[in-house]
Amino acid sequence: MSAFSSSDAVLERMQRLHPKIIDLTLDRMGRCLAAVGDPHLSQPEVIHLAGTNGKGSTQAMIRAGLEAVGQRVHAYTSPHLARFHERIRVAGELITEEALTDILDEVYNANDGATITYFEITTVAALLAFVRTKGDWTLLETGLGGRHDATNVIDAPRLTIITQIDLDHQQFLGETIPEIAFQKAGIIKRGVPVIVGPQHESALDVIETEAAKLGAPVLAYGQHWHFQEDRGRLVFQDDAGLLDLPRPTLRGPHQFANAAMAVAALRHLGFGETACEAAVQKVHWPARMQRLTKGPLVELAGKAELWLDGGHNPAAGAALAETLSEMPERPTHLICGMLSTKDVSGYLRPLSNLATSLHAVAIPGETATLPAEETAKAATKVGLETVVAPSIEDALRDIVSREPMARVLICGSLYLAGAVLRENE
Picture 1 (cartoon, rainbow, N blue to C red):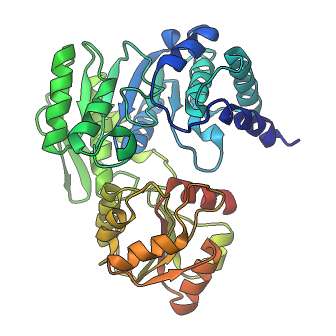
Picture 2 (cartoon, one colour):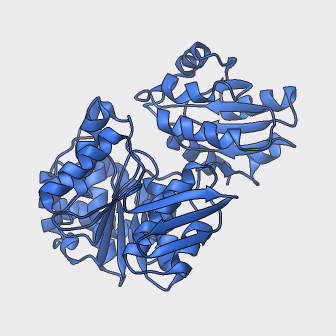
C-alpha cells in the first residue's frame, strides 16, 4: 500500500459512517469532539470565515499576511483539489501523510462507529491536529452555510468574516439571498467583531440584524472601510488611514474585494503595512484563474494559453466574465464540466458573449457530475456554440486543432479543477 493510499483508506471508511453526504446539525460534532478531548476549546486565536464566494481566497490572503510577519498559522479549508491534505495546513505546512493517517485513525476509533458525516469527522481531525502543534492563529473556512456548519463550534473566535453572499446550495440554505444570509450569519458570535465584505443590500440587512442581537460590532464595506482600484493598485482606507497597495497576485477584479477584506481583518487585528502588502502579493491559491504552465495538458495545448478556474455559481460566472473582459483580446474557448446541483445556465450566461465556443465534459470520477450532454444543452440555450467531448484531453485537442493560438479556460467546478491538477502534475 502506498503512502497516499493509507490516509485514503481511512477517509473511505469515514465516508461510510453516515448515509447522507450533507446533514446540517451540530449534535454529532459535539459528541465526537468530546470523545477526543474537545480540541475546539484549546485553539489559538480563531478567525472564522463564511460566504458564498471569496472565502477561500480571503483566507489564503490573511494567512499570507500573518505568516509574513512571523505568525504560525493553522488553516482549514474545503473542498480539496488534488489531495485531501490540502484541507489541513498545520503551522504553515500541509499536514504530512503520516500525521494525517494517524490523526484520522485516532478520530475514527474514538468515534466508535457512531453516525457522523465525512465533513464532520474530518473537521474534528483538523481541530485535533491544530492543538498538537504550537500556533498563533487558526483560520477556519466553513464548508456549507455557517449556522449549522461543522466548523461552527468555536464560541469565542477573535474575528469572524462574511464574504460575498449570493445564490448557491439553495437546497440546503434557502431559496433567497436573505435566507442564505441568515445561515451564513450564524458564525457571528456574541461581542465578536465581524468583517463584512461587499454585499447585496438584503444580505447586509440580515447580517446587521443578527449582529445586533449578539452585540457583535460590524465592520462593513462602504461604512467602516473602503477600497478602490486605482491605476492597477489597491487603495484601501479605514479609520486608521489610507494604504496604497500593489495589485493582488490573484487574478480578476473580484480579487480586489477579497484582498480588501483580508486587509480590513489584518488592520483590525493590529497588523501593519508589511502584513497587508504580503496578503495581496505573497498569496497562492490554486484554481482561481490560474495559468497552467507545465504538465501534459500544457504540452497538448502547444501555443495556446491554458487557464483553470473552479468557480461554479452565477456570481462566480459573472466574476470570471469580468476577469476575461480585462485580459488582452484573444479567441477564448471554454472546457466546462459542472455538478448536477448547480445552476449551469446562471453560471454560463455572463460568459456567453466572451467565449467563442464551449466543449462540455463530465467531471472525471465524480458521481454527482452533470452529464456533458446536459451541460451542452444549457450552454446552447444561453447562446454558446457547443461541442460534447468525451474528455478534457479530447476537448483541448479539438480546440487547438482549429485555433492553435487560442485561450482555453477549463472551468465550472472545483472538482473538475482538482481532476485537472491531479492529471497535470
